[in-house]
Length: 202
Image (cartoon, rainbow, N blue to C red; front, top):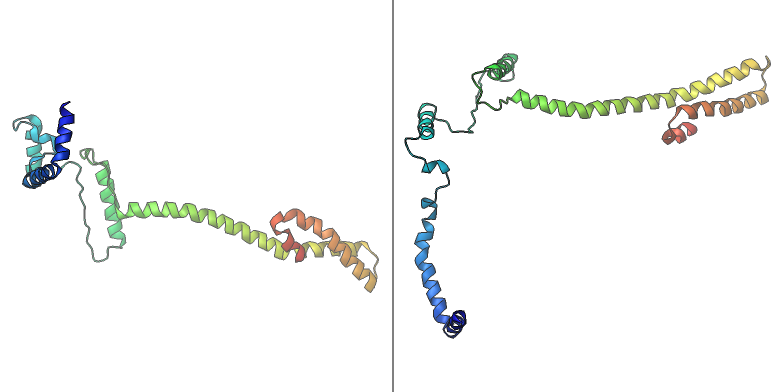
């Protein structure tokens, strides 16, 4: 019943209600602009100043000037930053920091050589496969280029040696055909199916 009367009142005086809301919004703008200055997102802000955690935080802040989760960047300078002495020093520094038991709060130590090593490992896995594929393709090409003639010559010599001593033109043509027919089964057995047409035409 109350809401029905309120709804009718708003409908009758809609312009007045709109003006009232507009004035209220304008008056609240200064308060809205101050929200960020009064809201605290850090839960430690409500800790008592004399609590152990607050005292420890003050000691760390005053003595070390670092915050939890911060990073430290060590810049190494030299006349030749790519030299072996710089590399050896950087790797030795990494080993020292990793092996120092007093530095238990260090989560990760990364140098340019760590990134370089990761890139090389990723690149090597790709190149390794490509090298074997290239080797296999080269071996196949060599077998087709040199293996087909060698097989044909071997079959042709075997046929000639098993025949009569004198060879005329007709016998030579017959030997050529027989050598061709006997060579192809050997060549096709040694050639992948995808490349048999190349070997056959050759």
